[in-house]
Structure formats: C-alpha cells, structure tokens
Length: 507
Image (tube, rainbow, N blue to C red):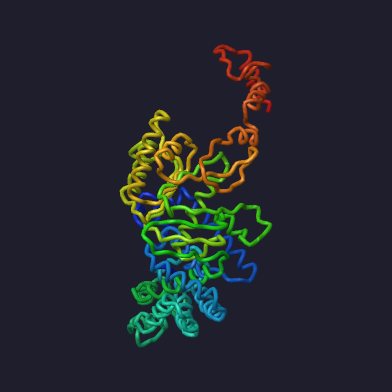
C-alpha cells in the first residue's frame, strides 16, 4: 500500500516545517538522517537473518514520516506502544500480519500506479512495461487478495490495531473498493466497452488513445478518501510490525506535566542500531542519567571529545523514538511526552537568510523560546556567540534564565566554566560533567562541573599541536630551523617563498 501523496516527505523543507513536535532544523542538527539510514540498515540485517522488518514501501515512508513528525499527545504514544507490545509478544499475531503485509507488498506497485494518477513510484518503474489493462488486472487481483489476508488476522486486543483493521474492513464496503476489485456492475458502460476494445486493439498507439478514459474510474477510486484511509491503515500496521522487531525496550511513560528523562544504559541510536545493548563485547559506553526531576536546567560540561555531543544526540534520538512509539536502546528509559523537542547548535546562515549567522541563530532560539512550555525538552549546544566573551555570557545567561522561568526542560552543553559556576553560585540548575581521568575520557556522566577541556590531549591525539605545526612549516620551507612559531613573518622573503613553492610543487 502507498501512503497518500499529502504525506510525502520530499515536499517538506526546513523553512516550511516550524510547527509540530520536532522541527526540521532540529532533525538536521541531531543527524536524524543517519538515524533513518540506520533503520534501513537494520531492516536489511533483519531480512538477512530471516526476520521481517517493514515489508512495504509505504511502511518505509511512514517510518520516515514519523521521524519527522512524532506523536505529540500522551494517549497517542500509549496506544502506539500497546500495539507494538502486542505484536512483539504474540507470535501468532506476528505471523498473520506478516502474511497480510507480504500480500500487500506483492501488489503494491500496481496499486501505487493508480494512487499517483498513472505515474507510479520510482521503486515500481518496472511496471511501466505493462499495459494499462495488465496493471488493472494486477490491481483487481490484489484488491481481492489483500483484504482477505487481513480478514484472516487474529482479533487484536490493542485498540489501535483494532481501529486499523476496521478501517480496512470499512473500505471493502465502499463503491471505490468494488471498482478496484473489478465488479462490472460498479463500472460505467463506457469503461466496460473501453476495456473490451483494449483487449482487441493491441497496438501501443491505441492503448495510449484509450488510456485516459480507461484508467479514469480506477484512478478516481484509488484516490478516494476511503481508499486512501485504508492504504494508510496498512502502512501504519507495517510501521507497528517493524517496531515490534527492533531490539531495545519500550519506554516507561508518565503523564506528569513537567518533562524529565531517567535512563539506564542508554546508547547512542546509530551505534545501538547495529550493536544491541545486551552484546557484552560492545565497544560503546552506555550513559546513565537522571535529568529534569528536580531542576529544569542542566549544565553539561566536559572535555573535548568527552561524549557531550554523543550524549546530547542520544537523548534527542531517544525522545523522538519514544514519541514514535518504538523501543529505545536502553536497559531502562522513563520519560514524559514532550510537546516540543528541539536541538540547537551553532550554525551558519544560508542563501535565503535575511540575517547573518548570529541573527539566524537568535531567530531560531526566539521561536523555541516563545513556544516553550514545561512539557518542552530542548538541548542547546553552545550556540550563542558575541563580539566578546563577556557579551556571549550575558546573552546566554539571559536566555537560560528565561527558559528556567518557563519551566522547560533544558540541557545546556558547554565549555563555559565561568557561566556554569555563576549559576551554581546562585543555586540555579543542576550540573553534570563527562568523566575525564589521566587525560582520557571515561564517558561517564558524573555530578559537578568539568574544570578541564582536554584540549592538549586532543591535539596530541590528532598530532596537531605546536611542535607538529612548527615541524610542518620547517619541512615545507616556510620557517627557519630553530625559529619560534610565534616569531613575526618577514614581508619580503622571495627566495624562501620560491623554495617553499618549489618543494610543494614537487610533492
């Protein structure tokens, strides 16, 4: 089955999607495209092992859509979780759904040809070699087989699965279904005559001449509200079926007003997609956190490459996964349903910008600030800049205090030791740091404020410290042997510059 055209993600842009739970700018900043890729990779791995994942193209599109637009209501997430849990725990239910979805996938291409007005999808371009009559015959066969397969599914206990199966059943009682199924009595006499002529007049030119009148009733039926509702229901069933095969555990949900996160052994999602938490040889370090319970503002400090960004993205990924109704890769994960999830990092402007980089950042932060509530969850990754360090501290302090008055759950990831200490002195916020022992990160989340950036250890690791730069300049002829790196450069050194350029050209 195919998701209706109105839900196609290709039509969405960063500027067009500012509303909803999770905006497109946060989607990009949190690398959710990599999450989407990992879901696809996991699907391929599951199929190689003989375990089904999304079986239809519509299921793939629905999962991608859910990544962009997770649920925003507590009850919606609960209902999705109940459906996923039922399919996950009931072996017979899984088997019956697998058969029905497999039947849907078999005829999906032909039906998509009608849903999209005779154009089809790139995935099913091979069907363009068939005549319109052959496509209709395939559709009619599918329309008889697919509902029958879902009718054989065991009666579900969860309300969402019952509703989805009922939507498919309701479609079978409509005139649109009878047209797609091939009931001659439901078709106009002109269409029946056209079908007869297409069987006799086989030349390609004649087929194209009658294509419009021949396909029109079927296209109208496939694009009817009843048909679209049934097709979307099948796509949603495939989404639930896929989530039931993912590793991890369904989050524990609370309906309290203020957002919080409590996790044990939380993994970064792209890593966890290929390395389940129960694999003892996993090289990835899990995070243990408890945030937002007592304080609404948390400072996350730590050394460079210490895991701050990895933890931040893991939290965003887990929040979105929770509100998709799918398992989270953690031993235990408890949270609430957020009305807004946002992730803001320092970013530059683009060609359509009306402001500079700083202006664009402030516009985005202003939007989140004006729409934040105590149910909102956001991570700010050292995004505000200024002409001076003092100016940056002042603006950032104002913003964090404003969010704190709202009661939104905010995590501020930063190297700004002075700012964290200033808030600590006023007894505002909680303070967490990434562990760092013997110039090496431990990736543990510990209470307190980090006092070292680990910059020297980082430059040693990538071999780009002061001595390495000096050695490189001497080797390339830009600096005299024994000269200081910070010595002034002479403006007129034609012989030395010519020699350096010659050495560079030879390399």
